[in-house]
Amino acid sequence: MHNSFILFTIGSVQQFIEPSRKLKDLYVGSYLLSHLAIKAKNFFENNNATIIIPTSPTDAPNRLVVSCASEKALVLAKEAENVIQQELITIGKAVIEYTQENFTVEMEDQLKSFLDIHWVIEQEQGDFQTTYKNLLQQMHRIKHTRTFVQINEKAARKCDLYEQYNGLFKQHSSLKENETLSAIAFIKRNFDRWFKSENEEPLLNVSSVAYMLLKSYLPQKAESSLLELKDEHSELLFNLKYQKTALSVDENIRQLYEEYGEYIGSPYYAIVKLDGDGIGTKYQEVNTMQQAKGLSRAISDFSKKAKKMIEEQEGICIFAGGEDILAFLPIHQIFQVLPALIKEFGQIKELNYKGTLSAGIIVSHFMTPLKPLLKEVERLESYAKAIDDEKAAFSMSIIKRSGLTTPIRMKFGEDCQNLKSLKSLVDALQQQQNSNSFVHKLIATLSEIKDVITEDMLTLLIRKHLKNGVVEEQLVEQQVSTFISIYQQVNKEMDVFLQLLEQSTFLARTMWEEKQEVNVNV
Image 1 (cartoon, rainbow, N blue to C red):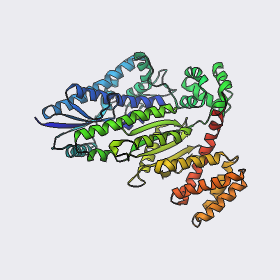
Image 2: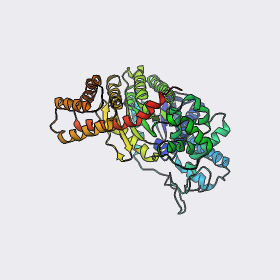
Image 3: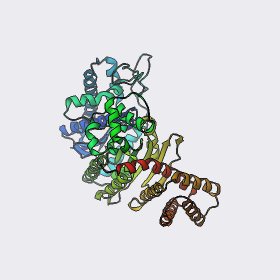
Image 4: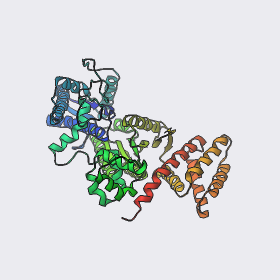
């Protein structure tokens, strides 16, 4: 009896999560994708197939590699596709009917056309490595062939999130004013309410970015008050803090602000997208199915630890599919979470203790629309990986009110030293009473002479500007050393150094208030 391998994919990830207006839309899209992948995994296992990738029983990326008897492979692949399609329709119908809406034929047609499922079959070629490479080549050819399901809909207003579909929901308490949603968008918006009705615990304890930030900033004794907040009330607390709005607000909200307003930090946060470097190549290099399963198990273990580490720092892990991670973090946690994740990934023995990650980081105000941010962080991750063949780099941009900053790109360095040096630069700027003015003057000076400046000249200029500022004498040389170290780490490229100064100034300014307030004795 011959064996065959099935490569089965559900996607795309972007299709599930990117069209999102709210944090819970985003999280639900990720949850649904993982749920469907687990459903497919369970189906194959229940039909005596062997799961090679992934090995985790409770979490799954959107790609599965399965081994089974050759005569069963085609039937199993087709049935798995049908099972997944029907699962989405079953969930959709339950969510929509829970909201007291009727489940229509138009809604079912949209859901039937939504999933992008591909699978390929390859008979075992004697060794796993050869068979796996052939599977990947087949899948590559299929995904580069433009296939689609035609859906015939009458001319009508389109969904605000999924523009390929008509908007079928125009008036509902879960929709914003003048918002129109398709079936899949409406399901994502209301999924958590239905989920909570079916389970004892909510799907997501943090339902908005503003709420996530408040949980990070406010002392523990405020937790019971936070639990009573709605998304718009979380945002209102920031408006009271920074815009001093005189709007009529609920008395409980105003009382909460009067009691804890001093603790509220920056309204800016970070979206971080991480991906393992060369993991696809690693899978192609293993010689046996057992080795592939061992690598899959190790990476699955890492993703579980990563999710826990992010949540322990008051962040939200949107997606952790193997080595691919998407997370939302308060700005001040970037410099704690990333080094910890990189260290953890580097300890995977199946990667010879040399596994590396690359990251895209976008920093933005919590009121900025999500969709362009998700596209930008995806682009930044790709930009980081393009630094050289070894990768292990990060790229970061900040969306300020004045516009998008030029991305910085750096290697993480040994023991994440370059990221730690960036944090040292931010700390150095925080220690100055007028860091904004100091850096702007330094940037203006350096911009005029950047083509002729030497390291000695730069040292003198930084020392001069520091001494002109209100900086204690004993800190001057220490801070000069920090600035020059950063300059050396970017290979003395002045344009990159200037971009770092600009971003570091912003981070120092936005993190300053948070740092002062969380240190208040409570």
